[in-house]
Image (cartoon, rainbow, N blue to C red; front, side, top):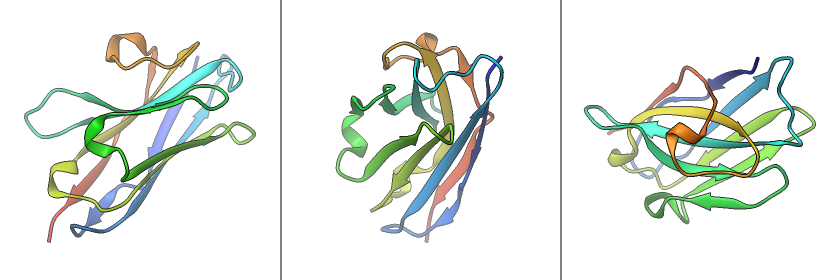
Length: 124
């Protein structure tokens, strides 16, 4: 099994920054064979793709976060990060960490493992 635990959410003012972390663990987690991603779900909205990173580098962002968010991973520590800057009220959502075997994908059903989420609220 794979366990994913997010942290780092909170309340931030528009234009501010926040760094999310996701700790991966479990007997079947393999950082060298699993891609990871961040998804988010705003109130009353469906969960949507935000960013993803493959095992050794290829990265993809949804258009609305390009230039503001940076996804990264530390394979030695089994950690995934999302550095968010220039935050906007529309970034308010629960942010979920996800993992899958193989290269990254952009759709929820392609991911096998999910964390419980961390709330990010952007408001003055």
